[in-house]
View 1 (cartoon, one colour):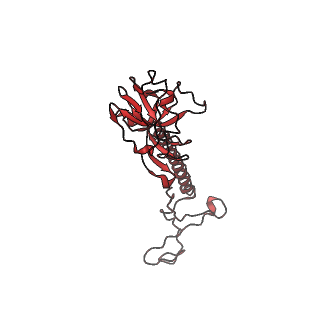
View 2 (cartoon, rainbow, N blue to C red):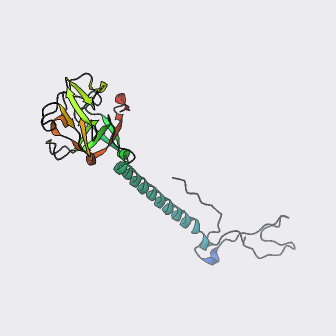
Length: 249
């Protein structure tokens, strides 16, 4: 906060609290006329310096100082309120941190990691293969009621054909190279996705197929079904804590 400054001027102060008791300032000119005597040695009437404010003006600097302090306080309150509104707006519509409570995304994300999620990412483009997304728990996923948001990797988008065979994932006829699984075997999908039992299924319109990177420790789309695109909160793009885990996703 800027320091509040005020002009300080010398003033004529009352001695006994009355106007008659004012001590007058006697003007002395450049030729050295003594106070109380004129050029002919006679008495002269004392003159009051017009630059010196009267007693009625002495309260003005204090009043101005108080006014400036109140104004400065109001300005800071406005700044703080605006900053809070901006911060809440950013959290609500742009960026939001999330904490990782389970090991379903190991070794990409460890328990206790904090990630930053871009909630505006898909306003400019669609969900892409390989994106790590946070989404609201779909009604079709029978998880604990306390679980609200989940984080998984997007494997397939609407129209994709997925084939899980021999511990590997095939997408539209091509085998996926998934270095993030650390070589863990990908078990086939259950009947919820693969009613024919041949390991193949097609992702419906407006749906996503997601899995955790820890393929042997993730309850994901293979067992619970597809995720509606409308349930996606945003894309996780960086680990922000702890510092030793910092990195882009």
